[in-house]
Amino acid sequence: MATRIPSLNWLRVFEAAARTESFARAAAQLNMSAAAVSQQVKALETQLGTPLFHRHAHAVTLTEAGRAYLPSVQQSLLMLETATTGLFGESREQRLFVQSVLLFAHGVLARGLPQFQAAHPQVSLALSTGNMAADFANQFTDLQIVFGNPSLFGTEGDELLREVLYPVAPLEIAAQIQSPQDIFRFPLIEVSTHRASWVQLFENLRLSHGQARYFFADNSLMAAELSAQGMGIALARAPASDAVVRASGLVRCLPDVDVPGQEAYHLIYPDRGAMRPAAKLFRDWLLDYVKTV
Image (cartoon, rainbow, N blue to C red; front, side):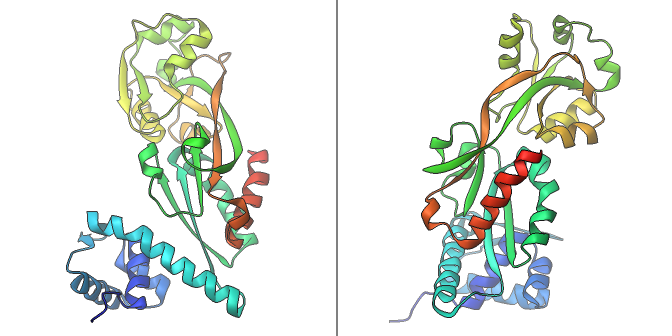
């Protein structure tokens, strides 16, 4: 009976193209030509009998079948790598898959990752982001960085960072905010996927917020940009939001208002004892790094 198990080369090419969302970038990583990557992906799709990518002018995105297939391919490749390393010694490159809440990845991880890579050049890190709880379900990753109750995501973990909430806006709006009640003169940009919200700030300040007008965005980066364009007041979530607040030219509306967040960012993983070497390196580095943020 003919096997349906695809060529290992095809799977390696598929994984690289899916991770980079580009045949050209996958080719550079694999020391191949973009045409060869395209040919191998096409051969894999032909064998499986279904498209794995949507082709665009300068990028590719996974089809529904491709998204469903990717975690199994990544897990299988890593299992093979781990087994090879265990039997025959250290491989030249150690793969590591990390998934993070978008705001933490943008505002905290991005600044520190050059330091991690310089200290551990043998680790090839693949970083992906998400916002909603569903983004973190049924994904193959070594480590995940989530916000809120860690038991909803994994069995073991470490608290990384808490946050401080305060309102921010362009200078021309912030200058008109003399008291907390003045906030209600403007639309409030709420991040629908974040567990900390304006209501938490109002409760802390003991403000009645029935008159609040909201504009909803699905992430803090978009909220900051909307505020910068004059759409209203955004909610900073320091220190993770510090970078985007600065980049967007936003300033504090009420300098004396700092509301401690009720929840935290956590690093989670299925089993610390079974953690792969690259994941252990990253965990140790991250726990030290967040103390400096």
